[in-house]
Amino acid sequence: MARKTPLYEGKAKQLFEGPEPGTLIQHFKDDATAFNNKKKGTISGKGVLNNRISEFIMLRLEEIGVPTHFIRTLNMREQLIRAAEIIPIEVIVRNFSAGGFAERFGVEEGLPLPRPVIEFCLKSDSLGDPLISEDVIFAFDWADPMELDEIRVLAYRINDYLCGLFRGAGLQLVDFKMEFGRVFNEEGYEGIVLADEISPDSCRLWDTRTGEKLDKDRFRRDLGKVEEAYQEVARRLGVLSGEGEFSPIEEKAKKQPTSKPKTSTAGRASERKKAVKPPKPAPKKK
Ligand code: C5P
Image (cartoon, rainbow, N blue to C red; front, side):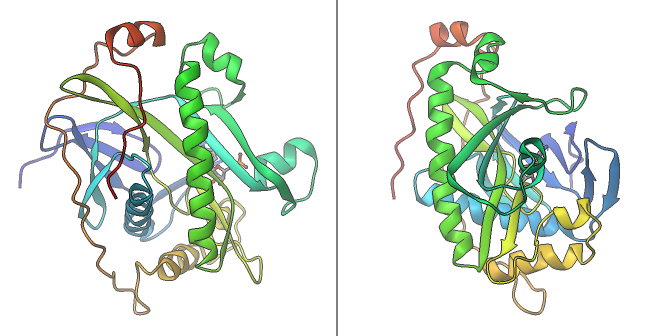
């Protein structure tokens, strides 16, 4: 088997060059970090579970017309994804108060919010992922107003759908983080896709009946039974059978990109607009 070319190593994932132009291999590790890298550890089997959970969620989202970077799963820890120009913003949606939100506003955790709250943070380890406003995003040209509108619409839609999906599995989606990226094809800019992962690493998931935390907070807060929580989420979503075996997920017949994403249009949003067609949400066939 050919050695893969590493391109980027993050805290919980690694990216390798993909087998075809315009693709990457996303590898899920067992490493876990919290509090901006101050706490480090390993959650045994997490990478395998997150690979599977994220695959399941991305496939479901594609079904409702949300464009994602996911192409197909390659093995237990790796998936083939579309190369995207990642927008350096963490998009957080909150349905209940918890974590940073509860701390910032001095409220208890678990208060239902009358409507979902979207927050933006800059993706920057060195600055500690600071909370940013829309005006800051435009001032630094991390995204333009049209793109941010599209991201907001996608974020509400994804949240709506995932709340129902998790509710069906006896889980409350308290909050979660998303990342988005720009994809390009032969003709230039194609649109925005949901990138990164959606898993118990990036979501707060509480048992609907008992309120038990079944996500990375078990690691952050030393609550124990961390591996078991990830397994429980996978089991409830139906991607893990009772014996710890994986249930097959149907393959998505997704058209694979044929050309490398053009990097020449990266940079200022105004230049991007001149160089490419205006962004349009990719219409999805059911
Ligand atoms: O810590 P905070 O309350 O802001 O986190 C909100 C949500 O975003 C949580 O579900 C958390 O797991 C997720 N998150 C993340 N990666 C970060 C920051 C937050 O996945 N760097």
